Amino acid sequence: MKIYEIINETEDISVGTLLYYEKNHDFIIEIRDTMDEWTAPMLLSAYVKRNVFTIPRDISRLWVEERIVPSGRQNIDIILRNHKIKAYDEMKLLEVAAGRCSQDDLAIKKLGELPEYVKDRMKTNVAECVVTEGKNILVFFADDTMRKIDLSELSDLEGVDAVLKNDKLLDSCKVGTGGYFITFNDSIDIPSDVLYKAGTEMPLKLSDFMAFMRNNVLDTTESCSVLDCSRQNIAYMLRQEQLSPLKEEVKGNLYLKGDVLKNTWGVLNDY
Image (tube, rainbow, N blue to C red):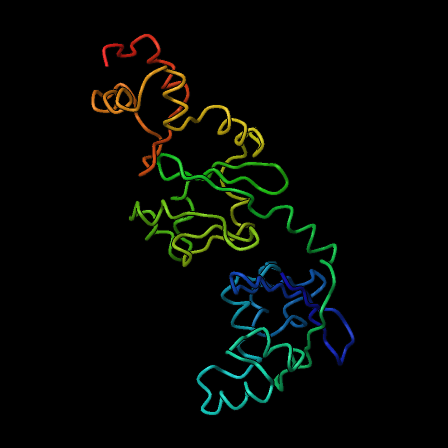
């Protein structure tokens, strides 16, 4: 991750922080809460007006793109060659001009570490998420809290209605870049601050959930060991619906330990 301070050179004030996640090619802008709709960058003022100071990745990227040469520029190859850039790279082009643009007085300056206000905001970023039954999602946050969220209660957000209608899309849920959002198919995002305010807080920590997974989920080999049987026995139990996999994989399934133990009285010794 690269970190840059966004500064107003005319006023000599810090406006916010630009984060660039190199692996994902994602940008996140954190605006200082001392800014208002009149002092914040024009593109971001509508968010600041609503007291949203962590800018979504698509809008953060748009802010960057507005300050650099577009990829479709007719002489882009010559521009890249003159700046010794091998391929079109938004961040490198932004660095070349120090983030300056003719439309405002803003610029960027590289930082060695995250400002404290950004660290504080990251405490409510998402650490993990799990889709459960009934269109619910368990969301674990960096501050060691967890909320159970009924996704239908967020149906007014763009794209969420499509997620509710498509189980495959719902199951694609994962933590987004930096924990700033959860994302479905890496195209429909729900910001972490929205998630943090939604749903019901539950008395379950991520460490508790991880302990449960470590101690209560068995693979096929471990299940054979517990039941003192062969893989053929396990396959038979599956056909007889004596055992149900949590997840099916080509190299072996995952099972709930309690479900496996229920079968200790009925191991098929004649196989």
